[in-house]
Length: 228
Ligand SMILES: [Zn+2]
Ligand SMILES: [Zn+2]
Ligand SMILES: [Zn+2]
Image (tube, rainbow, N blue to C red):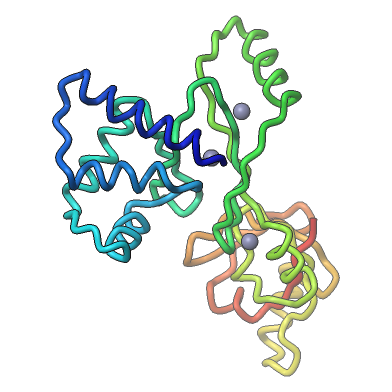
């Protein structure tokens, strides 16, 4: 994004706050300046780190206050992706975009599809609904991360919710009981499935149209590749 655009929104913001009777001291202004010098989606922790790096002495409370102010006065938007961390980005009037979020490396890609935008409007209107705003977030793997997990085998436990996989190995050399238990469930090399729920403990997958739950330990021993 270009520099003059960020300078413009920075000046507009400071003037707007001033005009609305919001007193900003030097510390607050340096956090605001810093926020508008960025070009991406930043979390509170990232801002805190960067600010420390730059030698700006602003307390956590000041940073929080500034972020809340920017959101309150319509100069920043708060976004929460699959990792449940609040991130902030500039709000440029009249501009809209949606996001792709990589579950593995956290890469955020912005996109705007006129086709999707129009389709959403059409859909809402079918219900006589008048939409004011929407947030479209697509969670998955970026090109780099998909490429990696597509080439190498990884434990089933590492497949994120919604991800599709192909079973490569169910633990050769392990006890027969372990293998036959998986075979009983219908999990064999070559079978494909989808992760229905993976929230850290037991996982739930669908293989051959059947929903099944596996303990964490077992899911760590099954080797899979990610598929589209
Ligand atoms: Zn959109
Ligand atoms: Zn990635
Ligand atoms: Zn964005």
